[in-house]
Image (cartoon, rainbow, N blue to C red):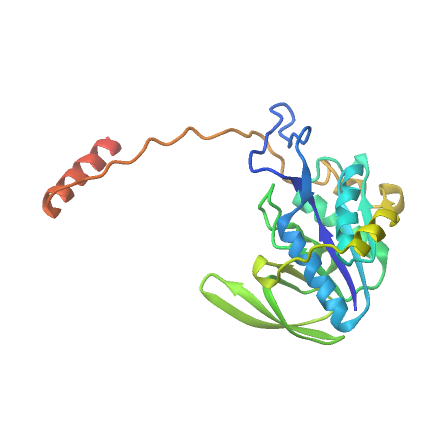
Length: 260
């Protein structure tokens, strides 16, 4: 089974700083890690490889330093890493990003399965995975919490819902986005770390991919960040005490006062 895992390198902090001039993330001085949800995608790919054999290719789109994320994935059991990197891709929104990653996947050749984390911790849109499947015209199953059965032609999956789960069977090739309930990512072995250190990371630029210039980077991004700001802190609430009829009357008076 040939599996492709799409990952993203994100800041290792919840205190994300934004450049007020460009409205982009300020990454200087902030350690980067593999997006936490993508760690589960890597682990699930390795488990499927252990069951069915095959190869795992990991793809990320980002600056040159994102190759460290690919090496970490290789240390966990992936076979090869591909860095999609070019100034022409800068400023891509989720649509342009998914188009670019889909182009990179086509460049890699035949595959059976694509696995992504359900969303990135810095954007939280959960749009890139489904966008890739749209550009590749393949089925997608999101929020996968368990792979029940798999063959070379189809997979039977548990998809997490707000109150339970549903069983879905999909033909292959397909794309999955996974949630943290699906597994527990492994700690890389010493052998894996040594292999990752010497692994060759292949860089794919616009020259190699030959994508439509009007669909990449800022030009290919139908959405743009116009303004980012920190909301004004909300004033603490008020606790009403007393008998229920009195509380109800006081609450009505408070609501009327807010409306007026």
